[in-house]
Length: 176
Image (cartoon, rainbow, N blue to C red):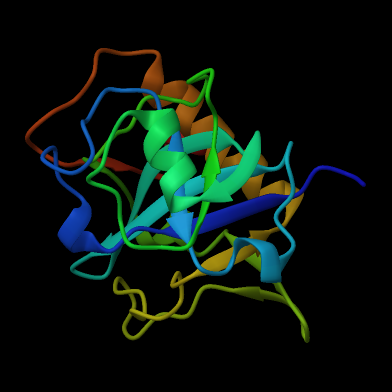
């Protein structure tokens, strides 16, 4: 089966250093939808969230295994995991480093496309700069072109030092 690309939404209340250490490689993400949606080992998973309507891009990992929460806890060494039943994990910790301060401007977010049962669609906006709170929820399949865009942004941002504190907003110039 060909490689597929997914986003998994982390609730913003868990988007902080106490739950998920910034700068550390992304090793795991939880959801109750991975198996039902068709996520498979070898697929890329992009961690996203929303803050004040802005899309946040935490980073990317490769789903090496899909395991239970208990197994994810053993692999990550953390008992402080989100209460999801299914976890994609990367025991080798080869994901990008988690960036809790990387926001995408509306022009970049408009370029992202997800695959649904009814076809390929764009994210939904409530107003020009503000994404609908449900547009990234759950596990969503990305088009390969959208995954490539997110990869270019992550590669460019991750070449620099780890950012902490203030939000860094990726604009259209970061897509090149």
